[in-house]
Image (tube, rainbow, N blue to C red; front, side, top):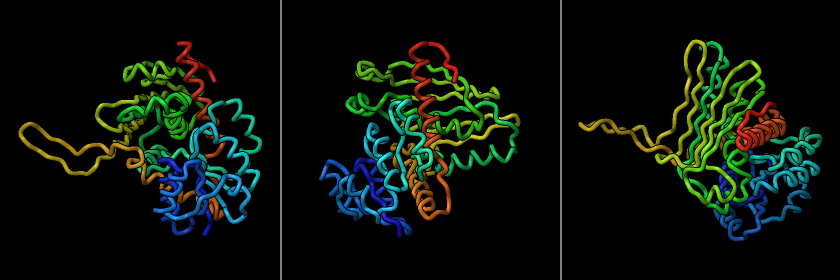
Length: 326
């Protein structure tokens, strides 16, 4: 079994640690985090042992490392791990600065590095992608991606997140690139702050609409909001020349009630770790196959750079009020 270390013992690190510990081909080894309490909580439930980052880099028995640390640490940690010959699963984004990330491309572009755009591993979104690829519905013409959170994160998080486009919408930029399968040449974005004035005071927005245009003229509209008012809203609609293919929200159950006032379904799965639980498991499966030499990373450092480029273009467009050509 390949030994895996997890850097970062927060929510994402914890879900990766759980999936690694339960995997038949992987073993949870070192847990790295400045919070001894968070490390102990993971060890107590899933195993492993406390470690420093330097320990992980130097330990030849550790084959792969999951980077789930704060974003501003991602790039430096990835470079150190690549130099140590480790396989890497790095959460998004690869960095908060595109120029700095591009400078690392000669090293990380050749590393065994999987970027954690977990939505590519979601079974529903993969099924939608398959329908587009098989050509039954003709040519994809326009795409609509909806990504609305139930409620905003704490202001302390927003202040260091890099902004809505780099932190939240970057998942949607990667999903759009994956589904459109055509180079994106233009980005136009508009933003607002409807949820909390403190978000604007922190220099961010909580609502955004982004339009992407590809080289072949395909259009994609991405809708982002920090607050839906009704739950975690994750939908995709792909309009093709011969019809529509869509992926709807996941519900807590398939149970519905029918009565005189009307029909009511169960609530939406309201937390991203619940909604994308299967995707996170599939992502770790893929990482195990990368370690075994059975597959190459399906989401590469180049994909991480491309999504970050779209995030920076969207932020520039929102500030200038003008489309940005890539």
